[in-house]
Length: 561
Image (tube, rainbow, N blue to C red; front, side):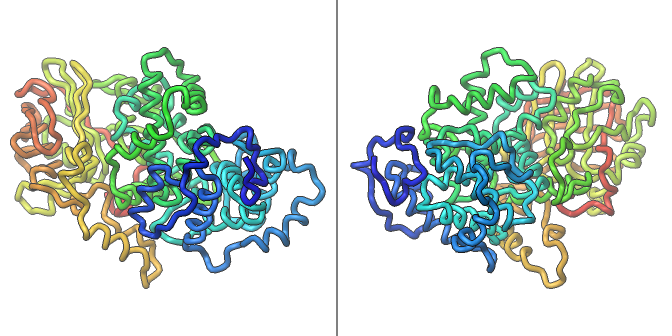
């Protein structure tokens, strides 16, 4: 094929060129919704020149910082930075992995150009400290650029995007790591089968999920990553989560029945993604991705903010170089009379990633503190979140993850009223494992995101006093963000001097009396759960676990409340 305008760096023998003659030659569309549909359908996927022109237009429309390096800057600096060095061995900056520079369908000139562009990006963007997706993005855009300078300008605009509601590329370890945590949170909620497999076959599931961007920008074949980039430029960062979740689902479907070793699961996923054409077409991948009924952009933004704050509390800064901040439950220092280390690690895989950074801390046990609801509250107040574990006299084990400080029950005086957020969930471990999350997570149509949530997000971006706007955002999965059909969909937790209740509406997931001796369980609307154990039971052991290293309630940012 001859495409002289946008083919300088392309090895056409490697490119799939079928259907070019029948494909559209122009795109006359400025409506975002129509662009979304066209990008998902692959409207410009079979015409190289059209895709190049669409990319150019979409990137030109990205709102950027006032001073953003352009093509002329590249022409001025490239000679000084690269000089006469061999481009194929040009060392790359520390913020990318020199071993992960995809070549896709580039010719030899294109392969060298990738390194030249990255070196010039490093020169013009000194604040970038970690950006593993950059080599893939540079390599991909070179296929659709007239020269290196045009590619440099396109990448610069993506990196310099200054729209606070339009996150594009992670450029610090803090942002990257919080994205990995957010992906882990989403995988736990939307890919429960694959997530369960990952937990079973890997010692540290977050180490597996830290590859999620690499699956997309590194391992995917060229004709797949271009389809990813088509929708990414139109819809933004959220679609990357969708597509990586779809890859995880397909991996589970294709490889789930085959034996896997814990030290090889990362490699197994990488190989699956590299060879994805054997089992899944680009169209099927996108179809699966957009069939996932994901949280709103607003909710994902709140989750990302909360994860970043948790990492900052752990000492991770925007200048941080990569390190492993994830620790599994410490087997040597963990001792429970209800669950084993393995069971606690399974529970830890369910909780939000920002709290999975912490070690479990025993706050209350009836064996030490007695069967008293007053002492229960005394030891649990000031801790958020908490994990409630119950072992019945029949050796059944169940419990609940509770997102909110029990101190919040006092806001209603002596009246029993519900509080908490949609991150709460209930579960049973014995005789079989089952987790029940907030009903809205599996049925988002029951609670459309409310207009006030979006207004809150937009109005919080600019503040006159210069304080961090995220400090005044209400928490992830707060009920105020949703138009719920009834109050029974948000009865998370309640407590008084008489009892504690978890879940409500046509029953209660858990009820415990004031002496912590007897309880009952049934189906409830909030979690749409089955009874967690015998419907009426006698308590043998109760434990409440907190999260070591968490800040005290008065010091904790409001996004974590």
